[in-house]
Figure (cartoon, rainbow, N blue to C red):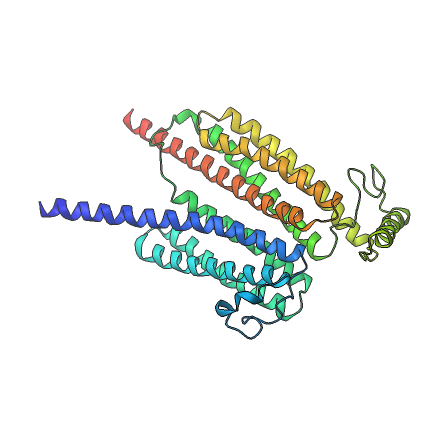
Length: 357
């Protein structure tokens, strides 16, 4: 009887540990997306140096900075710092909780990696301010945020509730193909977000001001005439709006064009994923639903990219463009993990069937 009671208590402790871990990673997922959005607002409003010191805020303890001083661009930068601090503290809690309540090495390593990433992310953010926003630090800061999100999504999938104890052994190839397409989409979306960070932090967002043409050409030649047309447009915009737009270089034009052209690669890989997920919908239904929903995200992302150019980088639109890309990255990664889990489950069912035979 005592043994049964001990087992019940142990089961309750395990269930509690899993529930706390699951809730924590869900909160972290949401807060990380909020943090990415706030970071995009900081850049869109050019508010990165509105608070020139770090880790203090105008000499105050960051957490005691008077609310009455949260004005104009200071609001964006200071809020960004506070959300980042909250993400860091919750990640620290998660790492400690997993270390004491989860014996799986993979979970402990992933949680420790997330903690390391968020610490490095915070230091990069501080150095970005102290060294007056150098492009390479700003790009690394943005890219690491997306990579941190992937770690948190991995943990979220690992702690997700299981509803498929048995899978048809014959469904393994279909699920495996879907996971490969989803991993491919994750990779090309991550690369696109890296290119997007380079676009933002090299001031290449309006290096090509027209859409769908580029420099008034359907097939851009990237010659002096194209560059002259673009810079003439920027001069006319400056005179008409009193918003100074300096001349751009051919390197900036090439960066912007690469971002647009890579979007075609993303679309092609997504079509492959959708086709594979539809065929494997019986084996991995959740992955199929996520793949279908990712189409809406991809369409929204493309539309926001177009609006970012046509509205001359309206801050809210440009920031939505960034965070929607992050959501698409998270969805494709979760889809890959889900399809891979179903493939592994099918393999275990196949092995069990073979042993029974």
